Every structure is written in structure tokens, then in C-alpha cells.
Image (cartoon, rainbow, N blue to C red; front, side, top):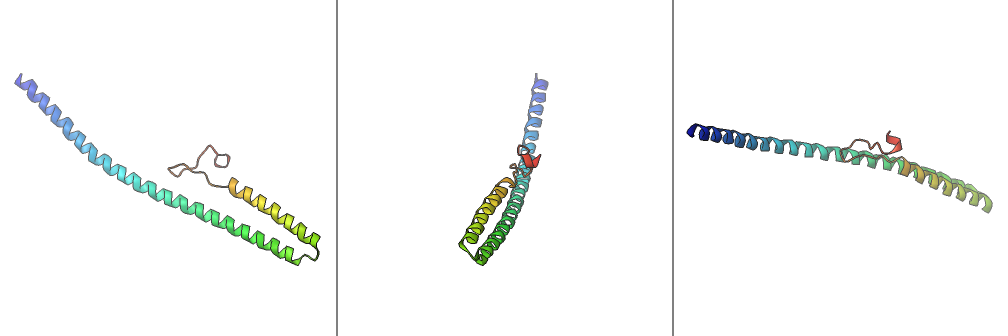
Length: 118
């Protein structure tokens, strides 16, 4: 009986030490992955911001070109045509901006549910 009890205590002691050792390694792995996830989120946010800035610059350039064209117009009809072109160009660029956004999952990988990521 004493032998069984001592063997049982030894087994319980081994399980307890192995579980406590696992907790420390798991917590270290969790902190490492959290740091990596934060880095990936910052990088994806930066790339999205850069893409939006580029799109904004191209829209501004197109608007300035249309304004210059409208300013050069000699008659009201020419000015109205230029204004209509500006409205159409604005609608097209707005559609392009929304359709070419980058869709990413939380881990930073492209979301395959969207057509442009397949």
C-alpha cells in the first residue's frame, strides 16, 4: 500500500511540475505572437494609408486639370461641359477608390472572399 501511495504521489508531482512549466512557455509564446500581430497591424495600416494618399493625390491632380480646363473655357457651354466632365471623372475615381481597397484579415493576410484577392 505504501508503494502504491508513493508511486501515486510521484506521478502527481510530475504532472504538477510539467503543467507549471507549460504555463510559462505558453505565456512567453503568447506575448511573442501579440507583439508580432501588433507589428503586422501597423504595417498594413501604413500601406493602406500610403495607398489612400496616392489616390487622393491623383484625384487632386485631375480636379486641378478640370478646373484649369473650365477656366480656359470661353463660353458658358464650354464651362458646363467641363463641369460635367469633372463630375463624371469624380464619380469614376470614387468608384475606383472603393473597389481597389485592400481587404485583409486580422492576421494581415489577404481575404480570399474578395474578387481582387483571389
